[in-house]
Length: 46
Length: 356
Image (cartoon, rainbow over all chains, first blue to last red; front, side, top):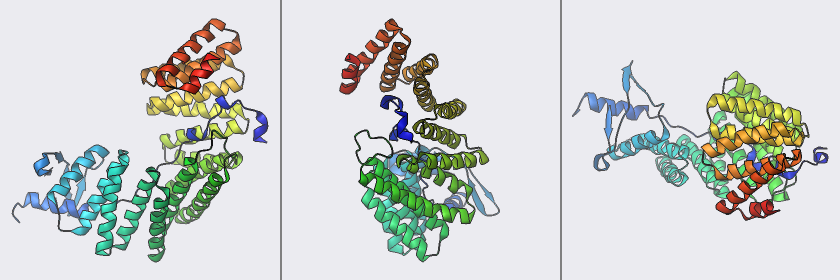
């Protein structure tokens, strides 16, 4: 029984001490955008 | 190429090269630079709505990583509106996922749940297993954060109000659902993240043995990837769980590994946290000399980082350890220092404790 250890409360970790894993954000490709800008740069006025 | 922001004058240079018709971009840049770049990109403009959606999404993510959640919300919301307008279902699912994560970070859990559900529904409609797994992970995170956000007046893990426990159980259910899919997909990185958060959820539910088992799995996967930040997190979480199991030697071993990794990572704040945990663990083991050693290490880092609250905690702990050793002058010195810091930081509870 973990409660029977009678750990002084000031010495034990609390819920804010736990470390969460990072969120996973969804990503959207910008390759088309970069291709367009690159083409505009190498071929101005096209 | 150079991308200019017109009237705002901001410009960002991103190196690029053409290889077999593909643009390779050095996009391993900080979120702040990404924000500048994509803000500039919006000024340049585009008629391609898919591209605009990607720019909004990237901007939202960059602001999210900068912890500017209000701005992240704004851009992920623009992205959601746009993807709905153009009927891009996959894009809408992704925008919903990002919006859900952002609303969670803002503490708007009920709205976040609606977004997670939309993400999940679209993933199911499209028979997209990866999307479904990611939606379930996000759902777990929202319920975990919701549970933790409810005030429990300093109760110990496993002893929270029913509302908290219900939210945490739901989080565990969603993580279980996610785990089944990412195992099937053989996605070890995703399994690692889920094991870590399952460990934290079971810890809060008071299932400390279960928490240890999950964090050990997380540690194993982090080692497979050579991910030292994740190894440090797992070691810290394992230490916390062993404290509640009353296995203080095991806790100390894991906190020491966390400390070693924190030093390798050159992260002073988490190094201080590991020293504080070790100081407390040696106090529980009645090894006050070692406790003092670690609390002093914590104190020095807190002073370096100008962390007055951390400094106050270190002084309080040092006062107690010196009292236990009968070093009354030293105990008085740290008690007075603790009192001074509590007055400065407006910590009334700490001030009253210090006066005792």
